[in-house]
Length: 98
Image (cartoon, rainbow, N blue to C red; front, side, top):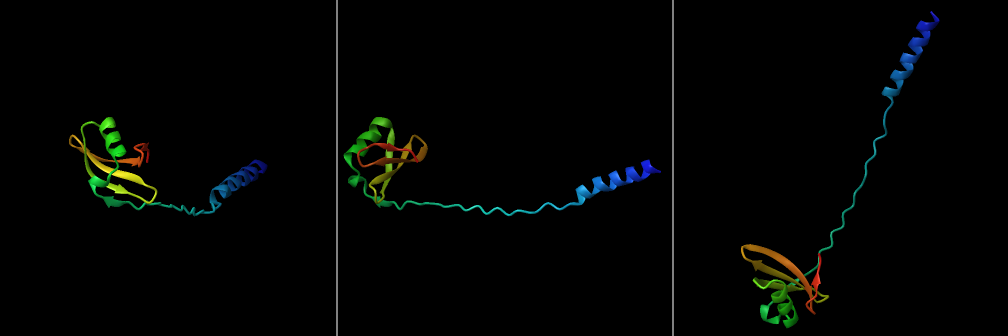
């Protein structure tokens, strides 16, 4: 009889651990997006240092559009072969990784 009562107590004790509730936690993830404001400039207004850096790094690149922000960083829309993309460069012709 003692074994039966002990077995029942162990069984009920182990079942009660499964019945316990796990507190639900809600994590708040905050995403901050910083978008730099670029304004379009004419291709003639692009500094010669940038044009020279573009021809040196990408000889077959065609400059489609150019944009500048307040810190004089330029965003260049270029076409190389059949691919289009963006390049970032400062006013001195130094490439920027973004």
